Amino acid sequence: MSTQLPTQIPTGGYNFAYLDEQTKRMIRRAILKAVAIPGYQVPFGSREMPLPYGWGTGGIQVTAAIIGPEDTLKVIDQGADDTTNAVNIRSFFQKTTGVATTEKTREASLIQTRHRIPETALSEGQIMVYQVPIPEPLRWLEPREGETRKMHGLAEYGVMQVKLYEDIAHYGHISTAYDYPVRVNGRYIMSPSPIPKFDNPKMDNSPALQLFGAGREKRIYAIPPYTSVKSLDFEDHPFEIETWDGACAICGATDSYLDEIVTDDTGGRIFVCSDTDYCGERVEAGHKGADDEEKAA
Amino acid sequence: MNKLLQVHDLTKTYGARTGCANVSFDLYPGEVLGIVGESGSGKTTLLRCLSAQLEPSAGTVAYDMRVKGLTDIWSLSEPERRMLTRTDWGIVHQNARDGLRMEVSAGANVGERLMAVGARHYGNIRTEAEDWLTKVEIDTGRIDDLPASFSGGMQQRLQIARNLVTQPRLVFMDEPTSGLDVSVQARLLDLIRTLVSRLGIACVIVTHDLGVVRLLAHRLMVMRRGQVVEQGLTDQVLDDPQHAYTQLLVSSILPV
Image (tube, helix red, strand yellow):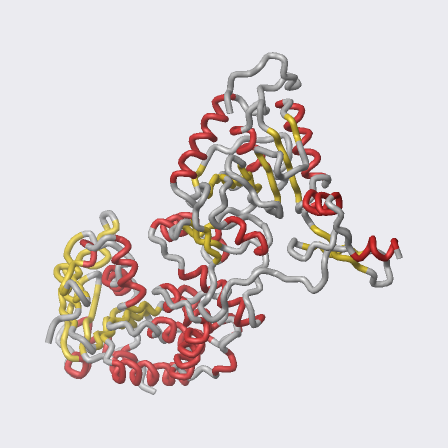
């Protein structure tokens, strides 16, 4: 992550990674503090970015602050590498840094994500950057910022349980399916951004560094490698992840998060892996889904 | 018997204006103290100072903590004070909307205090919530309804249940019956009286309704312009008022 720039990198007239060096230093300081206090939301001076709030301005600023010329970047949106948000953020960093990009989870040193954690297990040295819309998990029941900070400070987290209680009272089970609140390192309650709760266990004790950036709300928080991340629950209603009856129609995977795709207007639908890289790797390795078997028959 | 609450020379000023001045009294476990006076006499300021919602300008409010004994509440650290106010104390607001979470169900409102002190078993929390709804005469079939769908009287009773669920020893009530019609008022008063005597809870009740204190309070404090002008046993004060203002107050009750 050196800031010393090789002169040959074409950055389109902008500073390396778009942000100026002072801004990057400010964000790095916020990140260091966030890593030192796992799950604690560190305020930072979020900048105007050349795209609207809600499109990942927080994540982009974090990535811009830590990316170096020797990094390999992967950007995913809803698990896919080829959706609008992912394609544009990837090309943004290609233009402003000239770094190598990849779709392979294993080859990436830096992964910026919206909504998913890759199915392929992360390894030491990798950094996950999450785009966060609403960083404050307590906001749902407490609109006052001063009060939520106090609640975090004093670890008064009863209201978070009230949210889960309401779920069970109305639906018979904890119906919160994404942005499922977690307790980091036994201390701070944290909003894990809108990832499905399916991905929550992947955050626990992960060897990768996980950084969260919220641009509009001007907050950065982090989970250092090998930190405990526990999803909140009740003793008699333990935390559970989603399961599917079928397998991926393309690669036959039964252990990945599946998206439902409507295929025609007569009720036809298939389930496929949301993580396109994982699905592609399995197909290359010779796995087949129900779809291919039908064609072969 | 040990004092539960000891108030000494309590004064609250808002700049040059006086909220309440030089209030002193002791409260014993299970005792109900009524504070009456006209609007602007400093009743609510006094209650907010007593219940740790407002820091007094001078004087002390000492509470008999379960472990430490009689301690000035403003010498406690903020976490200790917040913990005290939501476990050993209850605060019933004049407007139920201030004391309830309107966006979550009645059951969650009652269960919140339990979860705040570490209850993590859904079944137990729900049983306890149902139990308390029954105690305050709310149909348990409404446990999953929002408080907004409740009548004013039910909201007030729900607020009481929410406060009593952690078995507090001291409850502060700010005009608990105002805004309710007389029949609902009578039922609520009956309920409060039953609960308070059965559970042995000490109470500080602020009201401008002398009927309420006649029914509930053992002792009475009459306030005017921030000063306590008269205090004593309720019947004594109401039947034989000494101070001119108390006499006026008692004589201005409309006979039905």
